[in-house]
Amino acid sequence: MNKIIEKITTAALQAPDKLCYKNGEETHTYQELLQASDRVASFLQEKFLPAKSPLIIFGGQQFEMLVMFLGSIKAGHPYIPVDDGSDPSRVIQINSVAKPALILNWSEITSFGVDTPQVTKDELKKVLASDHNIYDSNRSVGPDDDFYIIFTSGTTGTPKGVQISTNNILDFSDWAEKEFDYSSEMNMLLQAPFSFDLSVFDIYPGLISGATLNVVDKDTTKNFGKLQGAIVDADFNTWVSTPSFFEMCLLFRGFDEEHMPQLNKFIFCGEELTHATAQKLLKKFPNAKLYNTYGPTENTVAITSILIDDAALAKFDRLPIGYLKSNMEHRINGAVDEKTGRMTGELLVSGPDVSKGYLNNPTQTEKAFEQIDGKTFYHTGDMISEGEDGLLYYHGRTDFQIKMHGYRIELEEVDSMLGNLAQIKQSCTVPLYNNKKQVSKMIACIVLEDEFNDSDPKDLTSDIKDSLKETTMEYMIPNVLKFVKQLPISKNGKIDRKTLIGEINE
Image (cartoon, rainbow, N blue to C red; front, top):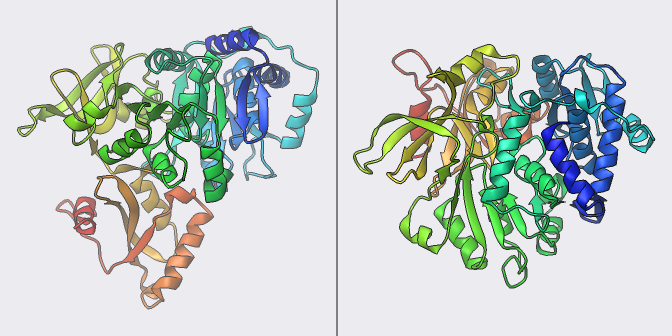
């Protein structure tokens, strides 16, 4: 049996009637999770799909998505979570790269425009209602096999599939359980989409520990009134999110320790935690534990942690990202910074949480994963400095990949999509930073094709954004379109993005 499945099964057998999932009034127990995923595993194994072939699992943050994740692993297939808000072209791109054996579709969409066979929502409902629950656990996903594959932005416009193995997840979960005191008493906020690896912070350490996953889904998040009720009236005691989501919730009345005394632990990941945000949190929840963490998708969710308290706020202007996991190795490709006296440069990481690479993409894998002294080191692309005590500090990206509201975005991918539109001759997308040094907006600087130069800018902006909505996720669409006559060119003849970033942020 797969080791993760074995641990979740143990938790389920110890407390079968314990809630594992809650979304508003909808609740499900560990026994339901166990039985339903057995049925999915039985159904999949009866199809005799190619061994270890990946499956796309398409949907939102429903209980049935978790059931299909576990059922896929039990049956022997890694899963690729794809959010039901994804545009058809992204599904086509992922399908082209991953070559999945099947699409499990928990949505109302009937066609994805691909040849890969799919199992519809109605068919899946029949599977979940059936009595067929016998599967061969010897065929389950193995220790070094892919467990899940999460697709992130790619520099050429083609997304990259990060391969995470059972052992990767197992090591992360073991660390998270100890570092953050996971237990069956935890009732965890699960807000991140399941296609975003921040959700893994809840799902696997949580289910292994027998915790309850308290889902706040996308529809709720988009409705201010519903979101306020879902947060303030909730009974969760552990908060996991990006700092941006927490900032949004600060607007809610009653979002404080007086009204929510049970909420005593906050874990942040996915983007930089600012001093100001941490200060606001500890003012509203003075007795809560606040953890700042860091980790690329390629390193299985998070690899550093630090407890932020009043003493840390007094000591640091820009908060550190924490100490590296004890079983990880790292190198910093750089030099000693004269101002801080700290070694500063790109962080390279090796250890049991490092991915084996990008699915069916040896070129990008070779670029990002380097063999040093017989060990695989991942080039994070993050500028990091290290204090004498081993404490790590984040200083931004080495390339033009950004994080905005927790989503990782390749600016070159945005430009690639813009370049496919008839109106656009050239484009260069750059980040606009706020006074907290966070990315607040994406600005696309655009040179139009000659026939569109006299068009109304408002109409152009509307047309371009409408076109992008048909081909990409909403978070990938630039906030502002700035029409310019020409873009700055560097000495080597390339568009000078760094100069443009400086001009936009003057």
